[in-house]
Length: 334
Image 1 (cartoon, rainbow, N blue to C red):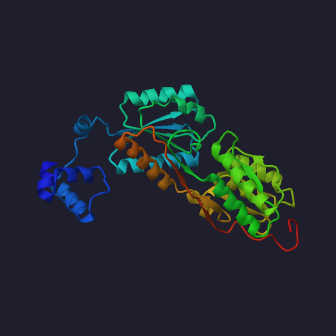
Image 2 (image 1 turned 60 degrees about the horizontal axis):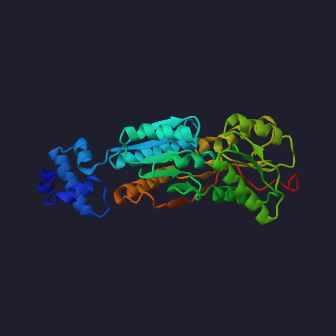
Image 3 (image 1 turned 120 degrees about the horizontal axis):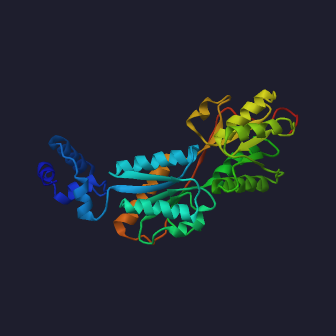
């Protein structure tokens, strides 16, 4: 680092700030330091840095054992954000988020000397399990309840569901049927609340929800039921995967989308633009969620203020495609 500082005509401290991604470095100075690093072939000695700072270059991550798009996309975003800050991830997955499982996972990560912890576990049992967090370990939870008493980064799920439902109502549909996610998932509950709020605000009928399990099969099963009901002209599915199954069922039953039934999903997966028809959906910015989660954790690590609770809420947005349209003529649903 001394050689880099000499070559770039800056202080040793400035080199350290550049290496650690500190924002208070002028762009020209940062570029000069990076050029010197490249010219000299300098690589940080991570073991030496850990001894000097008392902090390892690893972060711990606990996630639910699932292949569902949301948690997996969040995990990837956190890994990318951590890597950009010079940290690796030690990942452990659990089959259920209860106190014992979380305690065991945290203990295993603490033994690996992680500098901080991020938990991705969007299920309702999670909040009581968070009491297992060591009081001196920097930690951030993704999709935590704002009242859970821990620092968290969340997406406003209610707002997203409200946008989806309001869009369908503004197209002229008299009401919107909701295919929701599992009741023990916090996101599923909040999306139900946003859907209901939009209907009640508009004075529209609030039909009973159909409960799915996030899978295309559950969306397909819901579509086989809803497709037989002529009065159903608009459906909001709680994720894009269930919307995919719903579209298949409606197609098999001869219910054209969107001329007879409009469909909105949630997540805006990369494939949504290639569904038949391309799916209108609510986009969550998972990359931003990963960045903000790591930034929040770094603040705790840098300041030592582990007990200061911060809550960052991101706003989703509606992405319009060809799966939604006004209800046809004066037929059913008008």
